[in-house]
Image (cartoon, rainbow, N blue to C red; front, side, top):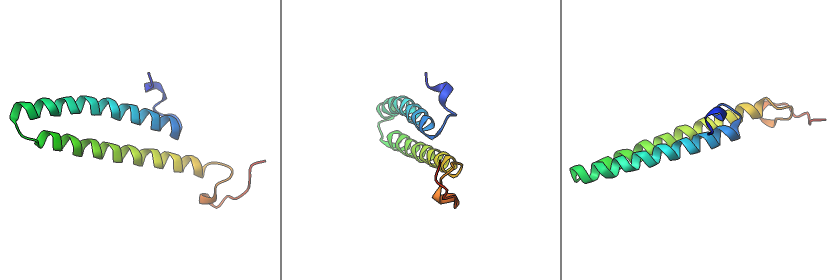
Length: 87
């Protein structure tokens, strides 16, 4: 449902990434649970936790860089040195 908005602004990109990460997380947790049950050790759970953590960090980086790009290309942006306020 949100797939067509995945390339929008920072806000839409954040919504898309959070929804995607949630879906991936749900499937990964089910896989980890089955793996832990099947082999009797907690390593699959640990591996999925690390993978989901890395996915979250990558998504956060993507949202921050998209937001910074948008902020730099506005008419009023202290970060880019442009301090002219919009009319």
